[in-house]
Length: 204
Image (cartoon, rainbow, N blue to C red):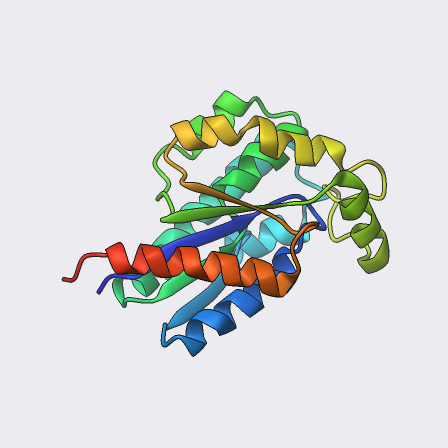
């Protein structure tokens, strides 16, 4: 049976780092072979993007992130899916629709860059009220120039505003408010959704 591709995006502080290992463990307990990964990836282009986010801006960073994405797909994601694994990816194209736009890149340019990137079987968008996001970021510290201790509203708002574009572009969105649900409750809801997807995956 072919694997399924699940991406998890959302503003800084939404809980991706907490939720993904829990989701992976829950699916593994149900007998699935799970492959956890992230973007920017751990490959050479991904390391360059991750380590030099402060140095690259605008179209240069957008193109670097996209180049890493296609390399990531070819070298890691596609082989894992071909092997029948459930691939869980921390950040994917939806993050580019938000972060690159916040970095001054026109949305249409970002959409064109990612037009031929593989679409996930499920694109999870985590969210929470801006004051909750800001509190979490203040507690844990920021990890890049896209995360800050000011208002989280612009980033959260763009995820909401761009949902229609993502749906039009072939991303099956599933929204989870981590301000309303505990990580365990969120994982349970997502796992049920994934089980439904797996039951519809054709045998090969």
